[in-house]
Image (cartoon, rainbow, N blue to C red; front, side, top):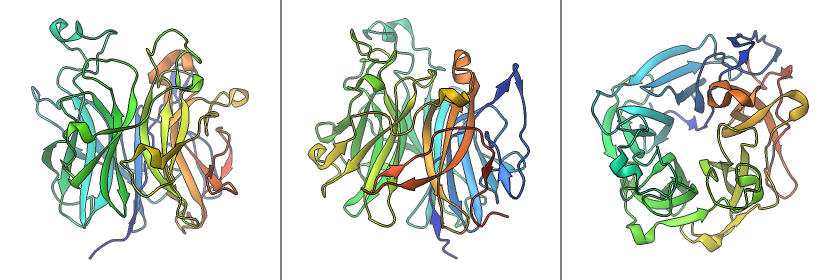
Length: 369
């Protein structure tokens, strides 16, 4: 049976309170953030046949969770989808896995590295800055079963990113075809800045664009895309990453919402570009919102470093929801990230209207039992 599925990307998270992980209790009426009390980041969530599925960064494997409740992952079922053997190009630092259903099959797209982000000195010396992620590349797993919880996940191979740095890849689906959007460098040993690149695909595991056809859609040129804010003297720690497709169901407008600045910093936030033309491979057909983050820290509630978001709907499809990671204490950096979820709406111009990040309590999604 072909299942009707709504794809979503979400962010796994960690909440440290006095250096302790503290689970939150969520009821049928209300919930508080975070919605998962375990270490992790870069979550992706997809909704299918009454289940929400989540993947997230675990570093040494790809684990799936599934839950009937979008705002309660502490009691979710867990299943190992993939664990690579040691000594491979994708054996370490498995980041930001995403679960997608395309043409009746399931795919997991993820980034990984062969040496735990520790390139040999003979490689690192070519980078103008230290470049630990120089060997990160994108990979794809396939599952032919109609149910992603069943069947076997098989490695389809490495996506062609022209033997260059590639992380946080996602699929961008459009009437003109399938595309790979990911965080990239201009050249192999750049180190910084991290940009958003797009290439055309002939199927979910094959890139059809050659290197000269690769398009850079966005660079971190604004003060809020740099770390520290407005860094004036070089591009170190300036990033565009974690891109995710978001479509307004009422107007049909299509956006890529991405993360900007540095992921272990309080200023990490979400930026936005909109496809205003017909060709995703034409940079002039995209319009970037340059006047600031569309989703950013809330100092009054101690919600910092909010980013790497994904989007889904409530169980009854009546509400739009953002799932993201953030920090309570940014001095702890990456180890402080936790998953949060909140309802969002749409602006009059059709763009997403995100809430201020916080901890709640909030009303549970419409139709959630």
